[in-house]
Image (cartoon, rainbow, N blue to C red; front, side):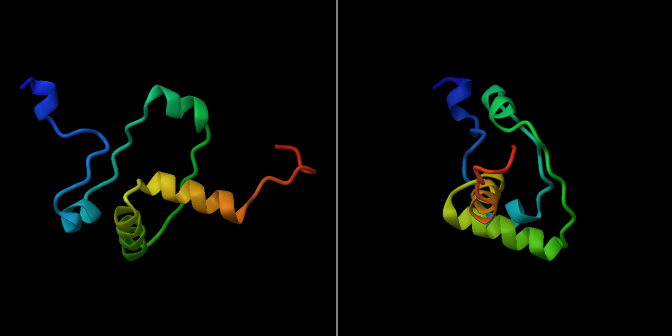
Length: 84
C-alpha cells in the first residue's frame, strides 16, 4: 500500500466527533474552490454556537462551509431584478 493511500484524506470524517468540534479551523482550499467561491465572510460566534454548527454539519455528512452556503442560498435567493 502506498504512503498516499494510508494517509487520511482531506474530506475524511473524523473518528472522534468531540475532538473535531473543539479543533481549530484549518483553511484548505482547492483551486476549483477559489474560482467558485471568491468572497470570504467572517462572523463572530460564541464557542457554543460554533460547536453546534460543527455538530450539525458532521451529522449531515458535509462540511461547515457547504452547510452554510446552502443556508445562505436558501435564506437569500437570487433576485432577478437586483444586480449581483
